[in-house]
Every structure is written in structure tokens, then in C-alpha cells.
Length: 40
Image (cartoon, rainbow, N blue to C red; front, side, top):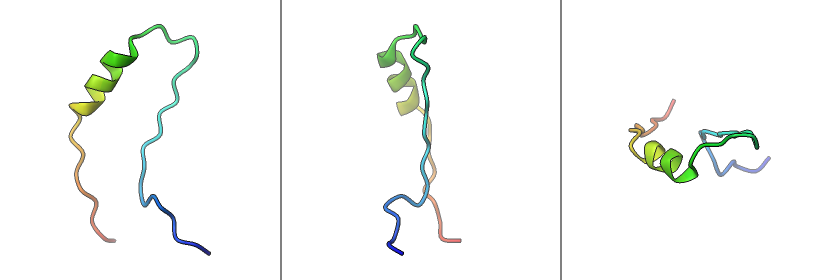
């Protein structure tokens, strides 16, 4: 088995019917603080 490129990930699914502003969403995500993962 090969090693996975991603050890952890966050996947978002946005419905086609969503009427929001993608730029606003991306800016809000950039403000979210992510902590570095440690070995388990």
C-alpha cells in the first residue's frame, strides 16, 4: 500500500443552489485558525 498524501483534511461540499458570495466564504475560511497536527 502506498502512503497517503493527506494525513488529515477538511472537505466542503457546497450545493449548486447556494446563492452566497464565494469570495466572502473564502475570506471567512482564511480567518479560521488551524492548529498543527501532532503524531499519534
